[in-house]
Amino acid sequence: MPNDSGIIDVWTQYLSPTPPDKRTAAAENVFRNYGRLDWYHNGTDLAQMLADMDRNEVQIACISGEPEHVREAVRRHPDRFIGEYHADPTNIMAAVRGLQEHVEKYGFKVLRIEPFMWRKPPTDPCYYPLYAKCVELDVAFQTQVGHTGPLFPSETGRPIYIDQVALDFPELRIVMSHAGYPWVLEACLLVWKHPNVYLELAAHRPKYFTAPGAGWEPLLRYGQTTIQDKVLYGTGAFLIGARPADLVAEFQALPVKREVMEKWCWKNAAALLGVTDVGIG
Image (tube, rainbow, N blue to C red; front, top):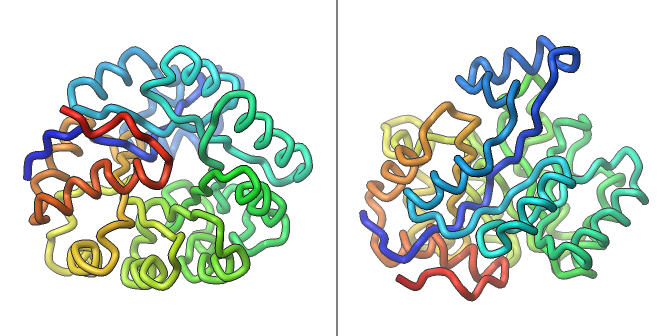
C-alpha cells in the first residue's frame, strides 16, 4: 500500500572500515552470509546512504556505530539522522557517562545495546544503571530481540527477558529490534502488556511476513489492532543483503490498512522519539 508521508527508519548502522589486520574469520563469515562483505571491509558510504534514503522517501534514520562516526553524521545532517549511543557495559560507569554526554552534548535520542555481544541477557545487573540513566535523560532504549545472525548464542534474544526489564523500569521506553523473531507472538504480547514497549521490524524481508507458516501471523493480526500504535519500521538493510528500495516496496505492499501503514512507517516512531518535522508531503 503506498505511503506519501515519509518514513522513519529506526534501525540503521554506521560501519567503520575494517583494515586487513583487524578482520576476523567469524566476522567475514557473517558479512559474507549477508552478501555485504564489502561493507565490512570498506565501511559505510554516508553519501550513498543518504541517496538511498532520498530515493525511498526515508526522511529520518536512527543510526548507531562507533560514537565518533555517528556524532559526525548527526552533526553534518541533523535533520536526517538521530544518534544512538552504542554502549559497552563492560565498563559500566564509562558507559553511563558516555550516554549522558552523547545525549546532552550531541543530541542523541536512543541507547542501543546488543546483549548477545556480551553474552548477558537484558536482565543482567550490568545494564541496569544504563536503563536508569535512560529514564533520567528521557531517551529510548533499543535492543536486539530474537535469534542472532552473528555466530553468538541466541538465548539473550528471547523476548521474555524484556518482561522483567519493563516491570523493573516501567518508565523506560523499550524498542525490541528485529521483532523477536521467531518468538513473534510472545513479543506482540509484551508490547500489548507494557505501555512503553515497542516492536521494530528490521533485519527481515517484509515479503515473507505473509508467507504461510513463516510465523508472522501475530504481527499482521495484532499489529493492525491492539498494538498498531507501537510497531516501528526499520530496515537493517546490510543484515539481509537487500536493496533499501526493495525493502520499502515490500513493506508498503503488505496487506495493511493505509492508516495503520502510516503509523508503522513514521507516526509511531515520531511519537516515540519526539520528532515533529516528518510526515508532511
